[in-house]
Length: 373
Figure 1 (cartoon, helix red, strand yellow):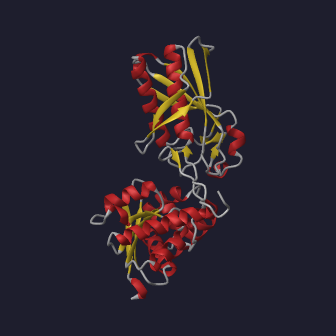
Figure 2 (cartoon, rainbow, N blue to C red):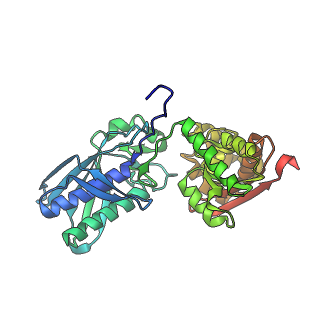
Figure 3 (spheres, rainbow, N blue to C red):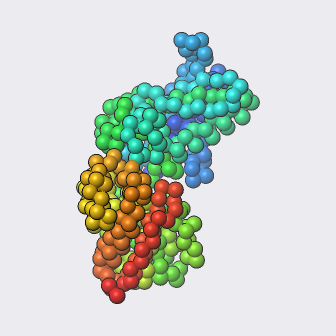
């Protein structure tokens, strides 16, 4: 292939959550049968199945005399530049009597949550809900295959987790002692900035080709699912994931002569958009909270709230206090997002902003006509 030939297609991979689920399934099979499989099938949260190789396996007896099995998987992020790529993710499992319960806990190298504002409360291991669901299903399928009904204790561990965590934002978020076990789908889809923007442009082109003059932009799969429930009467192609590319997505929508754009976004991203950031990367989070504090003072005159907001651990933590103390601020954030979005479109588009809470409910709905009319 020449230098001018086709670009290499980026290879997808699987998340730390999928790796932990695979390790758990293999460990249950090892504990029940005495041998570990070379690979195991895992169902991703997209309902797609993949085979994940087992890296290492061993069984033994603990200090309490209980038998255990450990299996590990090498996390493969594909061509995504992920700090956890090639990390060893493992689980130790023990049978826990006839309770039938599956208990998930964090071991060495898995972070523990110490501050509020995340999806899980302080004190919990940083194993997110999606991975927990995958682990439970993987363990249950292994129990069924082995024809056992015992409860299972699953301890997730990452041998180099503490070292890897030093290259993440975990400490800033209040996650100590290791990495987070993550994944909203189970699959890692790598995309360069250029490729992602090309995907947005393609998605908007398809939407226009379907005859719709309204596009619904979301920042990811989860916000898109909620938007599809809230917004009816549009073809599936009208829903386009823009990721972090707020400004460029609005420019493209204007270039493609849409009449209306609906932004359905969670509060954390909305705060960054309200600041006017073209790209809503996590690095802008602290400055965004400082801006939010200033908006709070203007919205409700609550000086104490305005001082507290920049000290919040995350926008998620700030959201719950704002919803109780100053709901007008939510409306103001959505309004500023709409103003900035219309500005990025060169005032060509009518903009609607649907601000979502963390359960996917609309907490604010603001509309601006095109061109400042």
